[in-house]
Image (cartoon, rainbow, N blue to C red; front, side, top):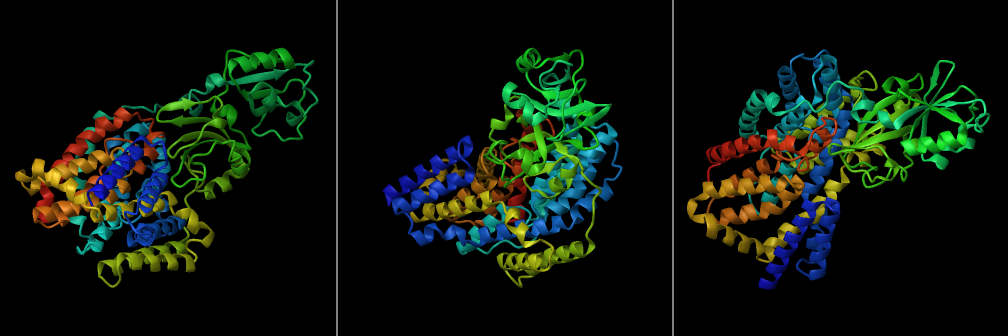
Length: 592
C-alpha cells in the first residue's frame, strides 16, 4: 500500500509539472497518466477506463453540443449585436453593458463560445467609438468566467466536481445551488473592474491599421516591372518568384486596379506593380535578377491589400481547431481557406518571416488576406474565430426558438430532479440534432475532444489517489501543518492552492485532481465536504491572474494586445478579493 501511495503521488507530481510546462498537450499528459496507472497495476483496466463513461465526461461533451446548437441559430449573436448596435462611448459603460450581456449567457452555455461570439461585436463597438480593445476584452473574459460559476452547467469544472461528489456518496449539487455565492462574487468583481479596470489596463492596441499593428509594413514593398524584365510575358506560376526568392506575391496593380489574388493565367507585363511580402535581402536578389525596380519611400498598407476581390482580416486559432499543433504549410492554408497568412502574433510577439513553418497554438492571432469569394467559407469554419464581422447578424427564427426551448428544458428538468444533469444533457443533445438545430456533420466538430480526453484520462487518477491511500497521506500531511487552525483556515488554504494551480494548468485538470483531496480533507476533519467542493469549483474558475489558466483569457490575449503582466496587474487583486470573500461567504452559505 505504501509503495502504491508513493507511486501515485510521484505520478501526480509528474503530471502536474507536465501540465504546467506545456511541453505536451494536456490531453496527451492525461493519457500518459492513464497508461501509467494501467501498466503499474494500481487500477484494473475497467476502473482505469471508467473516465470515458463517467457522467461528468458525457455531460461536458453534451454541453458542447447544446452550446453549438444554440450558437448556430444566430440567437446569441443577434442578441448581442442588437443591444450593442451603437454601443456606449465610455469604456466603463461599455464594460458594464458587455458584462450584463455575457453573464446570463455564460451561465448556461460554454464560456469560450460566448466570448468568441461577443469578441467581434465588442471590437466593432471599440473601433467605432475610439476605445482601445485592451480596455474591454480582458474584462469580457473575466465577466464570462464569473458568470459561468453561477449555475451547475455554467462551466465544466462545476459539472466535474458535482459528479465526483455523487460517485463518493455525497449529494450532487443542484442546478442553481451555486447561484447565491456566484452572484455575490460577480457583484464584487464587477465593482472592482468598473472602479479599477480602466486605471490598471493600459492601451495596448492603439487606433492603427492592421499592417501597422503587426509591424508588417517594412516587409511589404511595391515592385515595378521594367521593359526588359525576363518575367514580362510570363504568368506568376511560370515566374516562380516565391520559390526562387523566398517572397510572396500578395497583389498586382494594373490600370489603377488592384488584383488581390492574381489569377494563374494573368500574364505579367511592363508597368505592372507587384505587392510583395519579403525581407530586404530577397528584394535585392529580385531586383538584380529579374529586371524590376523597388519603389522606395512608401510601404503598402491596409488599403493596398483590400480590393474588390480581397479582404484583410484578423483571426484567432480556436479551441479544438484542426490547425492546433500543425503548420500553415501542412494544412495547405491557402487552398483550404482561400486565404494567405501574412503574420502571426503569439503572446504579444509578432512573427512575419517563414510563418509557414510555425506550429500553431490555441490563441495564436493571424493576419490573413482572404478572397472575398471565400468569406462564406470562413463564416462556416470552426478552426478560428474571425475578429471582423463578415456579415450582418442573421437570426434563424425556427432554430432559435427550438434550440432555446431545448436548453431551457434541459435546465428545468435537471433543476426539478426529473432527470439527472447527465440524462438531461444527453436527451437535449439528441433533440438538438433531430430537430435540425445542429446538423449531424457539425456535432463532432462542436465537441472539444481535447477536454474530453483530458477528463477521461485524469478522472481515474482521483480513484487511484483514494485506492492507494495517497489521498489520505497527502491530507494528513496538510492537516499536520494547518489542521489546528480550524476548517475555515484549511478551506481558505485549499482555495488559494486551487487558484495557484489553475493559473498554470487547465482548470478542468485542477478540479479533477483536487476533488478527491477536498473530500478526504473534509472527512478527515469530520466536517461536511460540500464547502470544500464549493471552494474548489470557484477557485478553479478564478484564473484571473494569468492568461494561460482559462481558455477565455487566452482567446482575448492576442486581440487585446496584452502582455502577461497585464493579467497580473488587473487579475491578481481580483483573485485576492475573490479568495477573501469566498473564504468568508462559503461557510455562511454552505455550513461545515
